[in-house]
Length: 290
Image (cartoon, rainbow, N blue to C red):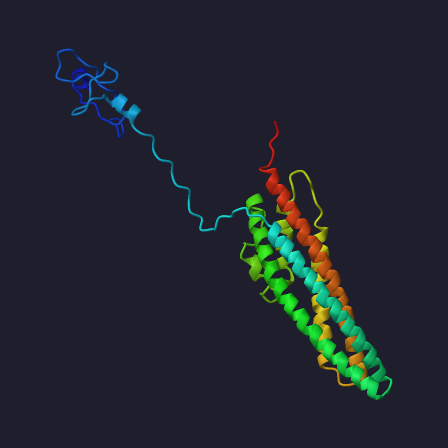
């Protein structure tokens, strides 16, 4: 290319250079209007400010909206009221189990006499009384268990949501499983314990490690009482003679006693977890090192 061609060559404008163009200086006597703000550069066509001042006075861009994840937000709510209610209803379960233990003892005594071939009028009346007590104990246990299930699940879901506030990423199961896992066959054998452990770990106060022993003890006794209770009911319903009825009554007595221990451990678990969440909520966010 000759020197003449280089002198008259038209420069190419790269993409984006127009938006980064510098404002034109004001030339006295020229057609441009002086910028009303800086009084140094020429104002843009049809405006009162130069390009630099117009950019400086432009309002800041609105922040981008957070991405929608589709997951419901977690809000911290006090579990104290529901925790106390759950402990109270568990106390009613214990009372019903104690009544059932008394009925089991009466039934065990009467069935033992009948198994020994002792047939008297008094034995017949005692057998009728034992059947009545057993039926009443069953009604009391069913009623208290249903009431306990409603209150306990409400409390369990509350502490699960609170645990998500304390630690959003420390949960293996979604919050819906806090209720659904109890009604899903086979899943209800380990999902509730896994959820309870995640809640427990997330609710530990800052700098105060706690052993998950209460969770494991309650869950083990609850599973044991459930299996033994079903075995006792099956044996009692299928009993064909007095000796089988006697053995079934002994199994029912053991089942009801085991259920009392499981309910006591459930109360300790509920009260301790409620206390942990209450303390952690009062402590505020995690303390940072200075």
